[in-house]
Image 1: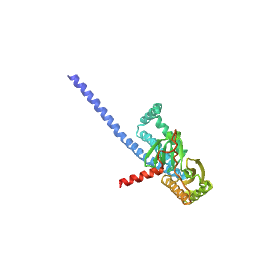
Image 2: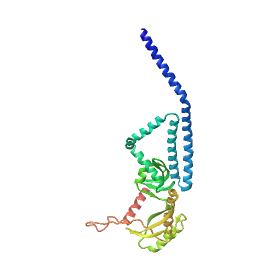
Image 3: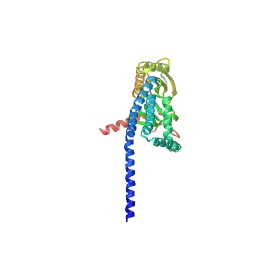
Image 4: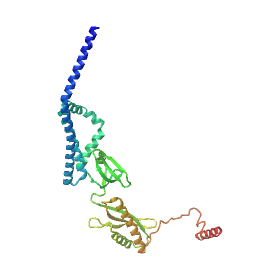
Length: 313
């Protein structure tokens, strides 16, 4: 019984001594922990300030909001990582930061396979920030997605479609898919087909169409962007003319589409005012076998309709 008491007393003394030792060490380390927290908090503020400053400087030099925003965030992220390591080292936890670096290096291969898509999109984002086929508010078509570019992030490019959808396209797809930029130089060529009668004068109709195009204020016409009309096809009942004209695409969505509608209406009305006839398709009826005439004539049809009308009255 006495021996058990002595053993319990020794265990109690060991626990007490260890607790006091750890508490004393903790009290001694509190200033270091506080210093580490201050370094981390100050580092986050400094990283945010430097990132914002870098973004403004890059944008002022390149006039490129997408690249400046992307690089500003990248600089901020890297600085925060550096300050985290400094804070751990200042708090006397340098072994933890070294362990984090060692673990990161050892797991790089595993993470590389596990987050392959994330890595691809990040690298693609870096490439796009320096060399890309569009800017903010450009109207583009990436794959089968059509809309305005809104932002470039680390993993994706955001488009706003003209029907109001927000589409997030992985940066790796932006690099590999065909990208069509409708507003890089600010101009886009519309076209449409209009048919005139076979007996109408083609050159006269073309002149009427060109005059109608020149009267539309939103249609662009200069040495580099010439509007023209050409014969397109001999259809069943019409000679089809194809009209080509240029519009400004800085505001592609509504303005370009409305301009096309105005041009179609103006050309149609101009041709009608000039006496040109735009016939509908002619339907040809063929009789086969022993039949040599229609089973009912148009006059019979008119009489039949007249009699039906009288019966209803």
